Length: 167
Image (spheres, rainbow, N blue to C red):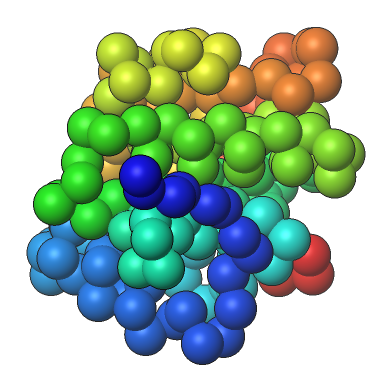
């Protein structure tokens, strides 16, 4: 019997999370546009989660507080990382579900991400209208997705995405 649990990340998890991200995404992860938004800004600590399988770190998720134009209360989801050895076992799904539930409880209204619609639509993510929200670099418009945690939050969000360091 295996035990999977989701816990808040601690400083002691940082090195293992960095190694896991390197294995899952490779060195190109630092050039991605979503990374540019997050660069130099710590994730929201209450929403930094680690997935543990029988005492071994197998995944994690971060959310960075953002503004979209003049709208506050948004988050950028990412990275979501799962150890390739256990990919497809539902651990990523559990991390996203728990992260979104905690984000809603914390009062955030909107979550933005760059990802695959077939994976994220189960969590309520929809494509962002082309040109409505801009990231500081190239993004395939079909991969810019948003989920409302508060009804109407996406309608109110427009403009440039910037990280907020004060969360």
